[in-house]
Image 1 (cartoon, each protein chain N blue to C red):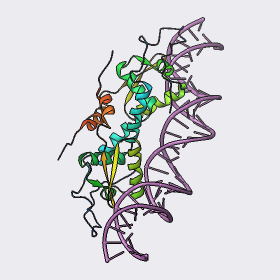
Image 2 (cartoon, helix red, strand yellow):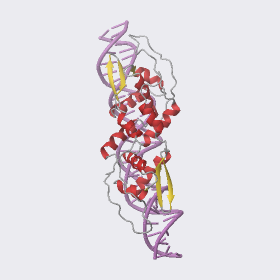
Image 3 (tube, each protein chain N blue to C red):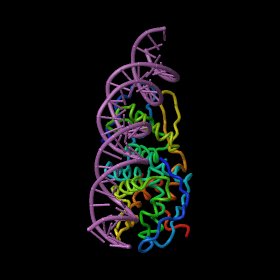
Image 4 (spheres, protein in one colour):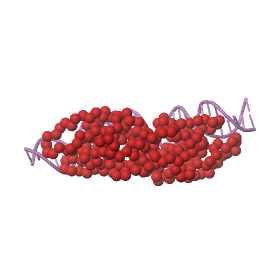
Length: 123
Length: 123
DNA sequence: GTATTGCATTGACAGCCGTCAGTTCAATTG
DNA sequence: CAATTGAACTGACGGCTGTCAATGCAATAC
């Protein structure tokens, strides 16, 4: 999965023009990139993205029994997607009696949202 | 990959209480969910996310030869990630002589960014 | 108690993903 | 022309992902 992200100084440059003027470096560090990518990956499936979408506006009010019929998927598969979202820290759940209610963890999407809307930050 | 997303009316409800008050529906349709998830999936790898991050602030100025040493990865692997980003519509490339320069497609991240920052939209 | 219901877990399977070594190909240089 | 260089492509490999059928399990209903 990978990558060091050290700004190793450009080597090999003796022929024609230099390939590009400025030395380039990332502004997100490895740690942040891992967190952001983890969230993005969890959203990288249409079903999970729609689950998040539904849960966002019915926080704490939606039981799994109502989520399942929204998709042409088996109940275990929906349960699996919810688990993926939970492991990524995007949703939490609460059991009330026989039913399980899910909700979007507050601010779980915030860091990604912020990064995405950044425009040429930091010189 | 899947799901129909038809609001099939809740069936099976005869025992105790009703499981949840409001009938739930998604506000992103299947088409939009597919697009959003495709972008999110492309960002769902730390390397690709950092590539986007670098390209965003050095648009059109960064050749591949300068991207490769930023990661502990082989050149073909970085090239592969760039291809994934290109196929997702996030970046474009331009060849100038021997070198290839990449740039983030304007507004490619916009739809996802907008969706992420939405707060209880549409009733 | 037994039966039923809602949800999670397991096991299995095909398909995709990230990685590299090796190769190819175009453009540049001599 | 031949040699070199930057970057993309190919093939292969292990590992992960999405899916379902079957099962497990706790809570409710009878």
